[in-house]
Every structure is written in structure tokens, then in C-alpha cells.
Length: 123
Image (cartoon, rainbow, N blue to C red; front, side, top):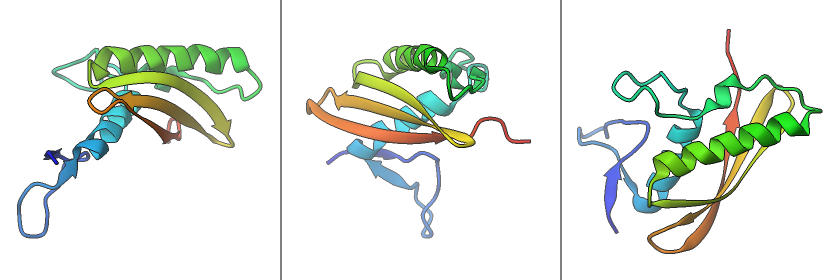
């Protein structure tokens, strides 16, 4: 199976770059797309999703549904032809939120689900 550099980038104790299997690379790619704020990357300022703009009102399904649609749009834009996003749900969980992403690996046509914790702004 093919390997690529892992996210976050790191080195193994012997010195080479830490690698990840292709299946893990897709989950890591989703984490980067969802959790990176637009403007955070200097050379690609439009990369990321607007999740950080979400001001949580746990009782507002309309707000979380709107942000889920925006996150899904960002995944479609930046995931390219490698990820077919099937669904995105944002669920408030106390002082954080969980971003549930159901996606299909376009290479193998296998469905996967990942839950990304989002803790909002930290002071």
C-alpha cells in the first residue's frame, strides 16, 4: 500500500519522516480541511472551513445545519476527487462540538466515518 507524509508532520526516532497509509491520509486530510481556518495558511489563504466562525447556540439546529453545509462545501472544494463527502453533521457536546463526516474513498469506493472534536477558541 502507498504511504505519504503523516499529519501532523513528524520524524521517527531514527530520523526519517513519519508516514501514514493512504486510508489514514484521507482522515488526516479531512482534519486539515475542517479544522484549518481560512487565512491561516500564508500561501493558500482561502484553504480551510468556516467552522471557527461558528458561535455555538446548542439549541439552534438552523445554525449548526448552516455551518454543516459550509463545512461540507469546503470539503468538496479542497478534497478534490479523492473524497466524496456523503454527509456532515455538527453536534454540540458540552463546551465543544463534534463534526461527524461520512465520506467515501473515491479510489476504493469504501465509505468511512470520522468524528473530529472542535473546541472553539481557546484563551
